[in-house]
Image 1 (cartoon, one colour):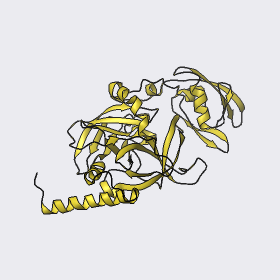
Image 2 (cartoon, helix red, strand yellow; image 1 turned 90 degrees about the vertical axis):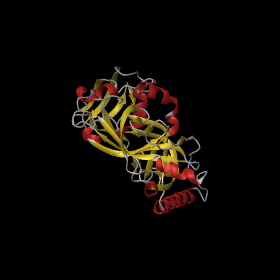
Image 3 (cartoon, helix red, strand yellow; image 1 turned 60 degrees about the vertical axis):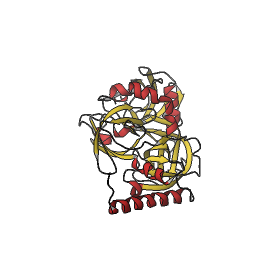
Length: 339
């Protein structure tokens, strides 16, 4: 390979920028060695996914999705946040030098939120190392990186570690919350001071420091949640862990109440007559004190196919008992190969 004088100058500029950002984040400590800083930025790719218009998630998540993905092995295995590839029919990766490469979907895991794809052409990119997300506690300096190199990297700090619940029947234990907010969060990489991958970007949220705070930031899925299920994902596209019952209800906590915002069209709760505006009072005869409490009590009843007994307060008609025939969320989705 011939490197021109212009190319050499550009390489030095990029390298200096990498070192400068790392010095800002880690108090003067550059990531292990200068060569490794450029490797870290180069391993974060752009991911584009095309989703059929009739997919279950096309209305809520869009039919054309774009985010980031991180190369984690030398054979083109790439880690991203799962909602980017959920129900996708085509995925394309773009390297930092503009090369577009088609990819196949290998796995989607609802419990963690991770997604895996593999490039169908050689990437010639050095993969990042997987780190340990356990030491990333409050106050830890880390680096959030998206596709685009130094122009899309932000020094951030961990501001809390706690369980996170999402309205889509999602509960992640010991999530990583960082601030300030990184706007380009979907599938972004979170690196420690050694250039090791410790998290994948999921959301931007208004309360990163604590559940009741006003502190904009991001939620990252800890990389340690991937390690126990990696073999299953590569072998079968799914974790072999016990699956939870899914009832297709989207909730929010408001003034101490768990209120139904909407139900999945054609899903179990929709079929059972649960409606937007209903207040969930109890599940399985046990009172509900919040979203996390609701999920844990519901999932303790049994697996997919279990009848979930809800007590709901319907505005204008009082308290009602509703039996919801739960199912497996994967069966309800219209998944293509690998999803």
